[in-house]
Image (cartoon, rainbow over all chains, first blue to last red; front, side, top):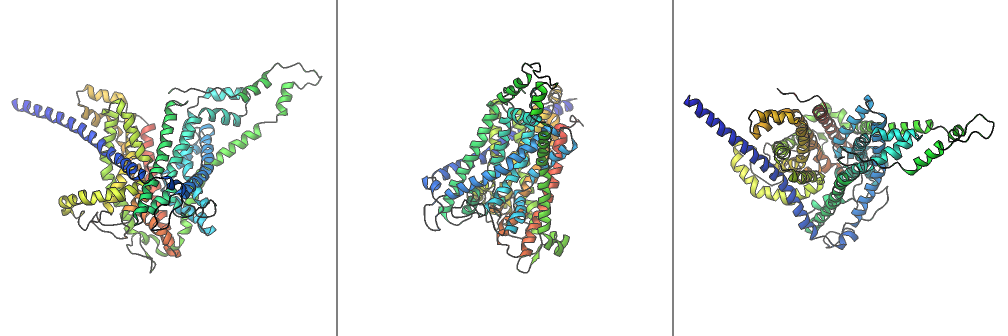
Length: 291
Length: 349
């Protein structure tokens, strides 16, 4: 009897101990996860901001050994590439989303499309890069901004399609019926009633896809290739911010390391601002709770 | 979920008035009413509708086209080595571009081991974070913390790589690696010489990168566990940890496995950060502190300098293998996560 009591007391202590141990471990894990994030941001701001100046935004890279120089051509190059990617990826993605939500409900085909889009989302970006290399760069005998834009555009499609679909599904049926009841053609009702109602959410999806490809380096290595000089031509190699950061980070020069940190700060600032904006829009915007 | 709908726009209202306005009795003896004339005058919308529909369908099908295009291009461009080496390509460990002898085993090994190291580090932490955020965290803190972990997912790979080269690697070299050599040197996994860069550094940076994915999906799955489960376990006198273990984690385990596999898929294909810190050496060594190479990193590092066709074809074949592996991994993960979040209610065993 006494033995059993002792056992039960020990058991109670063990359970109390395990409970608190688990809590401590969970809190500890959270701290350990947040720590590198804080460290990355502090390093970026500290090392990046100290080397950020007007030259960074207005000059092209200086030759080895010279101080100064900036990444103006990379910033413009990234803008060109991302513009091209958005032009290709966003309309196709939104159209695919419209098909999934408006025409393909419950159809087997749309399930397969959805699944393929999710799988495509998980394909490593470097694989996309070499596929586009084989498709566009090798036959055209040269790296080009066009190939870089295409690869980034393709990477945007699945994300845009899936978020567009999700947002369109949240639009109540009554809205569609009201439009059709007024004699509006179905295509017009889809574009200017359903899509318009879901617009804040759709824009969110586009911004997320944009933010994701904005930082991509691997697919650009063998498509856009990078360029030390000004170039706006689509059939020539073009520089991009992530590519330039990569090149500078692996270089042996302190001056270039400094520029790499500054470039990273600018890139992160762009991405964080767009993500934060998206969060603001989804929580405050028309589609409340859409996130 | 509440939804506020915007007012229908003016053009539709205008159309409606034109159609629904007072219909004058036909002034002419013609039997065709004004409404009918108005509608036929505008032409049938059937054509525009079906065109629109086909257009949308074409865009939806483009997803298949993209996947098919990637697959065919990769197969076509790796013909040379596919024919020359066959399946032996993945079991040979020689990587000699000069004598055109290629074997991908070191890279397969590098990919597997670096991903494994990343999972070993990331999974316990990610589950811990998910438990804390769903079960313990005060509401006010939850939003901030989940935003921070999401932010971790938004940082580009190349920035992780930059940070790893200049901050993480020196940190590992001076503090962590000597400790590991002292404590775990007997296993043979951590032996000098230690350059800082190598398999272990790649694993650590990978862990940091896949953490947000695993933890956010795990959180999703855990939130999907019905509250009644938690209440039932608590009502039996369980402590909070026992409630989490028996009521939540056990019910969510399939989804958690799915999210881990999804993280694995990401780790397998991650390129830039790994390529920057792994040290690029086509060798297999037992020590995790030695430089190595992964499938993705060897493509990133050597593709630009691969001048002859066989070399390039070998690298593309590695890409093809990576493509197939990540597809299989992603399909498995999606099926698991999908089965849990949208399938039947979780079973208690």
